[in-house]
Length: 247
Image 1: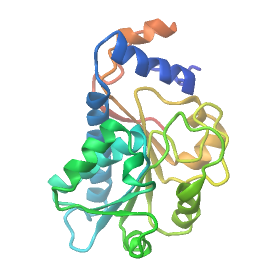
Image 2 (image 1 turned 180 degrees about the horizontal axis):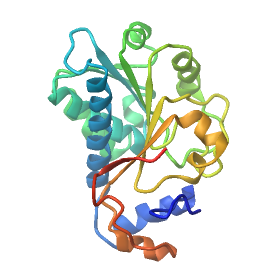
Image 3 (image 1 turned 180 degrees about the vertical axis):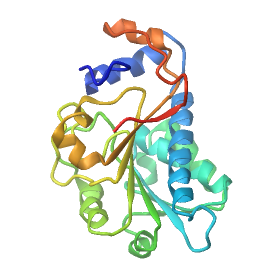
Image 4 (image 1 turned 60 degrees about the vertical axis):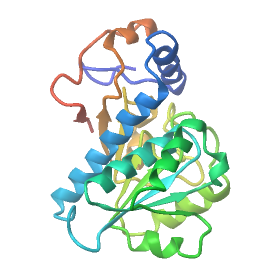
């Protein structure tokens, strides 16, 4: 799908092929992509706090909801950067720690050594942690999610949506179909979404736009020539900035 004269949008299947090519053909490892995604997520979160004059204010907290997959790994990386920059950060695991994939699990072990408060969705203090947040980052489900959310993520989404706290989603709002833009039951209502590499087609139609809020695009290090494998042009869309506001 053509989004503008500068770049295209990808289906979930196409994005999976981008990830495969990155690792298998271009030898750019998942950990490197995750590091890029998390750093840009932290940068955008910090910039939004700074615009509101909250980045260094006492009593302001960023709470990050962490899924077990690579999207959660990006959230864990962002937590590290935000903590390094002096932001008070809570991280809440949506599934038991043993469910984390290998690369996110390493990032979790790093956070345990930092001044970042960690917890799980069903911990007694979770409700208070979320309710006292200045910003919530949704890093629960990524572009390959299908069907309705379930388990603790299904429980969390309505609780987040009913708060008056702004939500920043990583790549896709949890519960939204990345290809069609069809919302699951339930689906995060984000104030902003930072999507990665190229926009997902589900974020470009009216349905997706209702849930994604302001749309930003971040560079995770995909060589432009890689897109020619998908029949797309090789364009240097991040020549001016690694984070672009596109909607």
